[in-house]
Image 1 (spheres, rainbow, N blue to C red):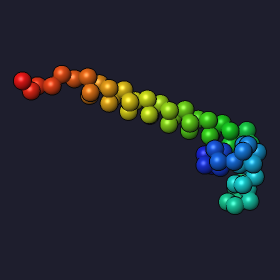
Image 2 (image 1 turned 90 degrees about the vertical axis):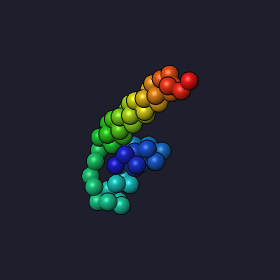
Image 3 (image 1 turned 90 degrees about the horizontal axis):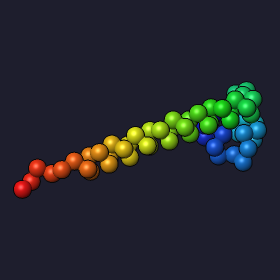
Image 4 (image 1 turned 45 degrees about the vertical axis):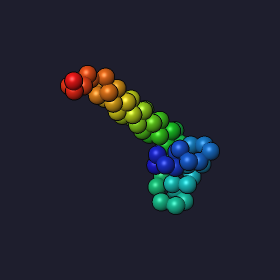
Length: 64
């Protein structure tokens, strides 16, 4: 569903694609909600990975 919502030019087109290809009925607003929710979650996960990388990179090395 998230692929359909993100790949099509509109959530209505994504909804139509789901109906035609997967025989799933979702209103465009539901496709939008789930697509945007997934985008937020992916953004949060990416931010956490970047933060962890910076914390790891900022640790002083024990060589010396």
